[in-house]
Image 1 (tube, rainbow, N blue to C red):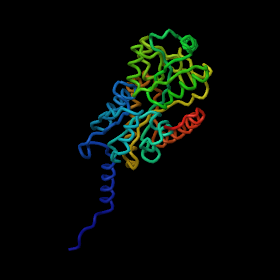
Image 2 (cartoon, helix red, strand yellow):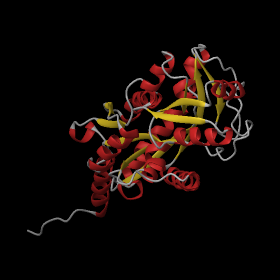
Image 3 (cartoon, one colour):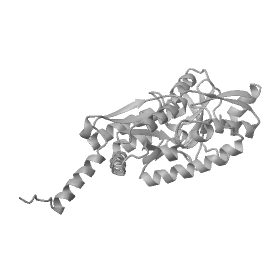
Image 4 (cartoon, rainbow, N blue to C red):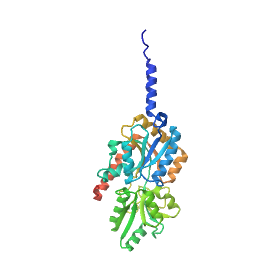
Length: 326
């Protein structure tokens, strides 16, 4: 008896089912949850953002989504964990510019190469960094802070959430511009830096607006200047550094999701589309906007282009600073 061969329609249905299965990033395939790696400690701005996104993706993808903190070395440990993860669409990394664009330029052997080891999934926001002073510091403006530092012998310490980061380079530029001896004190993330600022253990710090916004509103610290080309809607009273005479900090950082290189394009597009729906929800957009983020979805190719352009901008700033990779 001659065996029956499957029809073209049957073959197409089988191929579609296989593709759909390959695109599923989580327990629908194997029971494994979708992991979102965070390179900073719980309690910081990036951690809070990741948990908001995880809640939304859980609903959109119909799967368990967990946030896994791998804090240390400015996100380096989490990035290394992403590189080592299977490229099956079940492990993502939520990161801002520091780990993806800056760290590979300032560390000799970071243990990963974003261009080779990662693939962009989706961008969801941009933000700005800011300079703030602790509640016990008398300055109410950047001019008053500069005058106060001069009254202390022109020496001061400014906290930054990671070494060799955009905040540290900002400290260097401020110091050179005003002829001050400012030392950037690196922390393991924004949360411990914030704890020291709130305890008046350190007079000033540089971090993202999501790190500072609530305590700025509560009067527990004061933001004196922001990066970017325009004042921020969440704190319109605070001038930009361009207004304060410091140019070159107009290009704003980004937030995005990344996956291991080799992750199937179908899985990437599925998560990107789900994230677009999450950040379009009014409740989610309002929460992220209230943290100082400018919310907007970028697809995989848009995020990759944004990352390359930002990396090139900061390559010039780092080179001009004379910084030697450690």
